[in-house]
Amino acid sequence: MELINSGVFTETAIEEYHSQFESAKPYKHVVIDGMLKPEAMDALHDGFPRLDIFNKKYKGVNEFKAEGSNFEDFPPVFTQLLGELHSTEWCELMSKITGIENLYSVPDALGGGLHQGSNGSFLDVHIDFNIHADRGIHRRINLLLFFNKDWKEEFGGHTELWNADMTNLDKKIFPAYNRCLIFETNEISYHGYNAIKVPEGVTRKSFYAYYYTDLRPDAIKYHDTVFKARPTDSMLKKTLTPLKEVTKNFIKKQLRILGITFK
Image 1 (cartoon, one colour):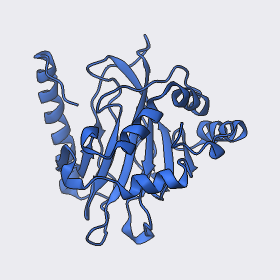
Image 2: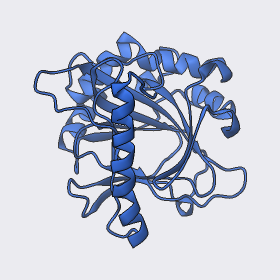
Image 3: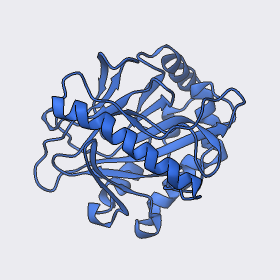
């Protein structure tokens, strides 16, 4: 692997990451700084695609951001990074860190891509979909790698980790440059970020990769992304969020019956 910084993934370091992952609260996670080689990180940062060429834009009740999995439109180094994060060598390393055996990723938008948000961008607290609707495999791990050079505390955009019943914000993770956040995807892994306040030309940038295992016999039934309002949210958002979720899930269920799914 040419882009990964092997110096932060020694056997001793991997054991420490696993220990941190297992003991972390409010759910299993670990933060790893310096994940990529400095020169690789700088090349990716300098070549990070403009927001307008991303193939998905979200602006609604619960999110305002762009997502890009159209790697053919990005500099080649992003395809290289995707390949390294999908490689057998990396997936085996992820299994060592998380303790989840036989992790792998997939070559579609639900395997990896980019996120970017301009001023006002936000992603409300949610848990992620649990089963890949097309492939019938179990989503287990999220990896987020941040590209926010010279990010300031007052910009916001911290990744929030909430407790299981959404009554307390247990941890906030600053989206620092070359910082990687790995966390378990399950029924209590509530996370999101508040609206950012940034100058013109500054955006919140990250690379995402999702990891799966074969579907287990005891796995729960499929569900899509589930948004929840924060205790501090307005009454309007507390009302609109569950209404939107019911409507969204009904429509998607009907479309799945017709054999139509969305990536």
